Image 1 (cartoon, one colour):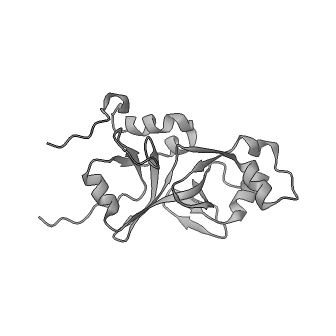
Image 2: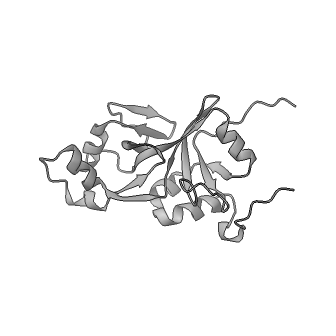
Image 3: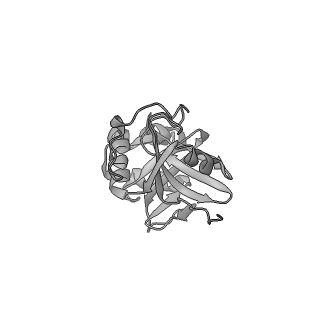
Length: 188
């Protein structure tokens, strides 16, 4: 049987309870891209402990970041290029480096961070340092090993759900309560 591969761009990857990789245990990852060359995603439920203020102090050391930036969490988006910022936001506004993803856009230039700080940026955003990457066929192999559940991405989970609830909220979109699944991998 030769079926065309199913690509999961604009989907969530929900780590199964038995996920052993510490980079992805108990995570929800938004897939920015997935094709025959591989996949790229951003972990959306792992706060890094940094705020937008911390990042702005590095980028604009001569300017005091607005107080509200202290409350804007930066997420650990994955183990690749952890010094590089990625901003997921609703489509519409364009920045120096913006990739349109349908309802969403991914901006990687500093001007989007400055715009968010100055109050002129996207009203809703998720900022990460780093991303998750998979080589050609790697994600498909992990999916066939039942490492991940998948579902279409949901903007409410991305932007309106507190980070610590995103994993269970994404699983609930599939009607699944992750706490009822065992952490043991089984093979029939």
